[in-house]
Image (cartoon, rainbow, N blue to C red; front, side):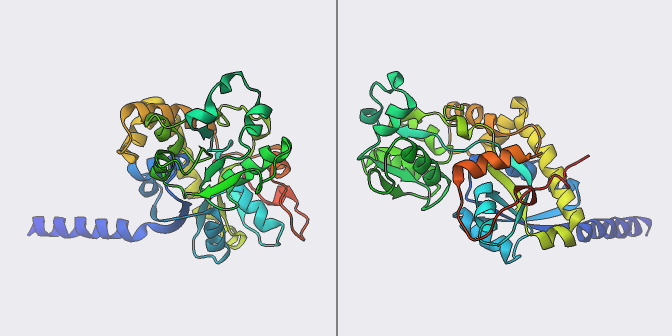
Length: 325
């Protein structure tokens, strides 16, 4: 009898614990290595630790994340800050509250012919060599295309025009296939696509953006957690819990003794050497904390130059309010 009562009490305790978890709806751009903190949080059950149940959706493209947040169909989006700005200049507001990456996630990679002798070229000469080339990109008007356009315009090339863009999505295999089938000469993909192309012997890094080869891309707001202002107003405790989850996950992620192995589990299709290479490269763009500054916001705005009818007060496009004190 006592054992039945004990079991009943235990079942009740588990039921209460289960119902106590608050659901947080998260929408993420694709399945990029940049979102390592999200994968660590899932593997290490950090959402549960802070009383949350994560409902995670993956979509193709930041524009879809932006629309989902604007419609308040998700609580949190993992989205590039450029989409926060793109919405702001159109009078459609979402706000970043945690910096996931403070540098672009894309390197420029090229085939052997394009990359021949590139180690002796200046950045300007490298970009000029892309004239007439077919460049693979994740999506139209996405981060990769904006970076390429910025570099092309700086050195006198037109995009579109002098460079042909080929949209291949975010899956790494698409870039491996693109180089294998010779439908592209170069690419600006999100990692781990670049490393996988190199591992296949099909290309090499041409412009190492993640290492800081382009000064304008070194310290800015690139990938962030963002939410609708109404969600922030109505669910401040939820925002704080999410920030706590990502703060702890980021600390684990940046520790090579733990983070590298967890990312290897997330990407089992990569061999150990490829994972080591991607981890070392991407670790540079994971900031030590999620804190953001107006200087970073301005650096992002200056290179993106978003256009629209609304003047933007950059201080209103991000907040550190929900970060752990």
